[in-house]
Length: 112
Length: 116
Image (cartoon, rainbow over all chains, first blue to last red):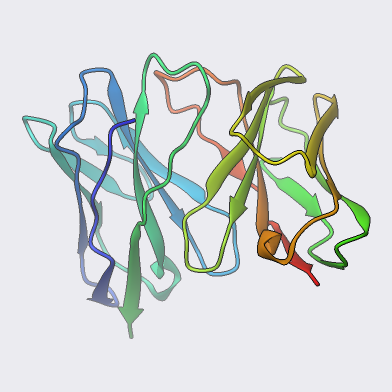
């Protein structure tokens, strides 16, 4: 399974944009990039996913580098509720196992 | 209803006890998962069920015994656990086990297990 590298922690101010980076230099052509987050005392929740093109949804945007060796999750206006651990996960399109292999993630704190 | 429920929320058990964790979803999902999460660590996959059949066992010790009695329910039977098995046990479900689309996994809040 291809590996991802994320900073251990990041800080943000409320109502400011947050850019959470993820490196995945060994990504293969069939790996999708998924992001999940885990709020305190909750199970993880899906945020967004993409393959090659940038993606937007109601929660966030995903910017994928042209060579796909890195990606950035963008929260456009951080709120206190966005304080969580954010996980960047590679998932092989050919993977029939349903596996999600979580890395260490980035713990995001949001200051009022 | 996009909720995965888990019971109990907390469980304390001795090393000789037998207990069970329960997970339920009513989203019509045909894949269900058990994860284990130690404090300050990411979740680790334990088991995957696909259409009520065990699809993946990530070399989990036999003192953990999963069961999927129907498409909505997933149990994890516990017997002769060790103190190092104390952790948060998370259940998840997804449409199925295929990749290629989001096929997002929906997680329950977990059961916090303490083994004395």
